[in-house]
Structure formats: C-alpha cells, structure tokens
Length: 250
Length: 308
Image (cartoon, rainbow over all chains, first blue to last red; front, side, top):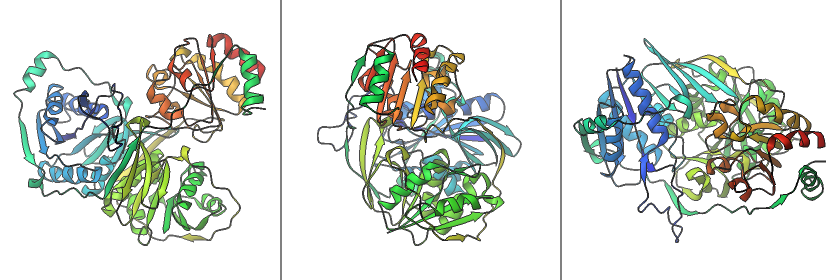
C-alpha cells in the first residue's frame, strides 16, 4: 500500500520569532526554515512502516513556493520514495490545504495518510481532521502508536488523562504526536541519493483549488510580558509571602 | 447570535472546560445551547442545565456517540449546526479531534484556541507556541471555534435550563473504540486545579516526584511536569504542562527544578502567582516567577511540606 505524507516548511523550532514593527506579520526574513517537527515524525513513521513491509511506497507532498522543495528533498533523504510539490505563493488556511490534499488522495489512492498533528507556526491542529472529513475517512489523531493489521490500523492516541486506542478501517488518516517515534538523521549517502529521487511539480490551479480567504489576520503582537518578581531567601520567607502578600494559601 | 457549545465530559463526569467555554459563548451571543454527546450522559446533561447562561441542553445519548469518536460526533454536530452563528468546543483533545472535522463538513475555516473574544467575528489566539498573539477575523457564515479554557473564567451554577433529547443517530462504522488507559488519581485535573506543582529535569528521576506528592496533598494541588521530565521518561505525557501538553492558569503555580524553556512557559505563564525553585539562579523561569527561591530542591521540598 501507498502512504502519503504531507509536510510543511516552517520556522525552525530553535528560532525565536519577532513581530514586524508594523504588527502586520511575523518577520520571516533570513530565518532558518525546517520541516515542521510533527511532520518529520510523520515521515519517520511512514518510512518505518515501509521498512516493516507494510507499505510499498512513501510519497511526500508539500504546498508552497519553490522553497518547499528543500524540505521535500530532506524527506526523500529520510527515506521517502518520491515527492510532489504543489506550487503556489498564496496564503493557505488549513481548509485550503486539506482540499488540496483531498485532490491528491483522489489521484494517488493511498491507504494511509500520516500528517503532523499541528504546525509550530500557526498552531492550528486542523489539517488532518479536515482531510479526514473531506475524504470521509476515519481519523486517529495525536498518535503515540500505529499498528497495521490487514484492513485496519490500530492507533493509540494521546488524550487528556491518558491513552485511547481506536481501530480504523483503511483507508485512514493518522496525525502524529511527539512520542510516536524519534526521527532519524539523514546520512550523507542518503542525502546524495535523494537528489536523484523523483520530484514532481504541479500548480495549485491545475488541481482546481482557489484559497477561500475567509480568515484574515488583522494584526500580530507580542504577548503581554510578565515581569520578574522577587527572590526569597528560604522556605520561611516564601511561606510568608504566599500567605500574607499573595494570599494564595491560608 | 446563537451559539452551540459542545460539552466536555469524561467517564460521564462533566468537566470544568464546559463552564469556561460557556463564558466564551456568552461573550458571543445571548442564546447559548449546549450539546452533550455520549452514552449514559443524562446526569451530565442535568448538571449542564444548572449552569447560568445556558438556554437549552441538547442530549444525544446513544452507543454510537460513546467515547465521542470524531466520525459520528462531527457528523451529528454538522447536522445540528444549522441556525447557529457559532459552534464552540473547549480546546481539549476531544474538541481538537472533532471540531476541524465539523468545520470541513461546513466548508468553513476553524479558529483554533481563542484566548479572547473581541467581536462576534474577531478573536485573539496565540501562535508560535504563545510567542505571538494574532488577532483574526472570520467572514464565514458559521464560526467554528475551539476555546483556550485557561483564558476564560468558569460560568457559575444556579439555573434550570430545559433538556431536549436529540433522536438523530449517525453511525458510520468507520472507527471503533478498542481500549482506554486513564491515569487514576485522587488529585484534581491539571487543567482544573487551582494549585499546580510541577517538576522538571532537576527532579533527576521519576521516584523523586514523590517529593511533590506530600506538598500536592496538603495544597489540594495537581502535579505536572515539564517536557524535559516527560522526554527523560520520569513521568507520563499526560502530566506535561506546556505548548505541546496542557495549558494551565491556576491561582498558584510552583515550578520545581524547571529551567523555564519557552515551550513550558507557554503552558503556565498565565498563572496568577508563579513560584520557582531552582538551584541555577540564572534559570529563565525566574524571569516570570513572582517568588523565586534559589536552592537545592532536595533540601527545600521536605521543608516546604513541613511548613504547610
């Protein structure tokens, strides 16, 4: 079976982002960009399922300008077989992304689509669930374990207060949580090999998708700053402050 | 404006996230209905009818909605959403699972994790792990929203709203519940507790979290952990406070042996009072703490337990 893995190019998780002085957007000029960490976990899971003999092909896809080809090559170096680049410079909300992916699901007919549960820039946590709705597929979100058996996939999910396991009929959508796996590093020979793996480009228009643009960012700003308080010398002073100054304990 | 809110409950216990989402709902419109979805949820429904501001409670009580699996739940919410201007759920793992599916069925964008209502179409929400606050405006006919509950007060009780049964059953059999492992604890839930004490990498191992338990018992506190402590395998992931874990805003937050990485701060910096205990006086946690104690936690924790 085929596994489709959509990935997103985002600001590297180590970068401390800054808001532009006119509050119009976050300043992304000259900052390091990477594969969204949750998407990297998705690539790793798909490659492991292939190595275990459950999958025949791992296809990665990314939507955006030509710059996303860098992340697609990285995913190929991690073990994906081929890549699809959907080219656009439009701003895409999760629903637009899900609609685009639904078209590719129709074309490629994967049995499993594995996505990161959220991107670390917009923090939406929507695309996988939306794709599942559009395809009318079952979904296993926030996965910490994925096990395939015949026509089903068992997904163990990280939920509030513990873990939940569900059985989904294939084809299905899975979104990854942090503890699903630890992604490997791409070796130099694999990075070289990735350069020769197939990467197909297509325009967003050719898939018949026009971004909906019903959600507008009015402005962005820094969060309110919390100022440092005082240092206390010992437990006695701390207790005194909590009781008599903050009045949070009696 | 009429608002539909999806109630949060677990094992047929109503969760405080429902009360907080109702507060967010009342900022949007006068008519706030609440949908309780599950199996054997009549008690939850009557509890919801007690919350002030609730216009009516809709109850979908059927085996098809047990465990609130998203395929059936989202299809039902989609069917019920006609006539509402806003559909809200708490940004819990249940709400996050179901609501984008509802939004896609309605062909609208979802607004995730709102922390403030500015107008019926305009909201604040944190992005970039809480390092940036975005103001977003939606032109969709129905706004599908998840609510960052730590940013809203809980609605009070003292009401008797009518309870109406929803007869519609949607069972598409795409997914099945297999099993659940819930952490059993006598302590309050992390996201509902008024006091939280969390341990970080400085705790050195899982056994040492016992040092927090005595203090938690005396304060009626929930116990949390930093991602570093979870990644190191000290404690399970459901204890994690931070951008990728639980977002908390208790009256008192005590951070023990936690350096204060951005991703942890994103999960607790809205707490009313923050206490930090750390032996490294340059730890970033002290920059947000109201009271900082530079000391070895293994000396200080037993002292603190005794002093309480």
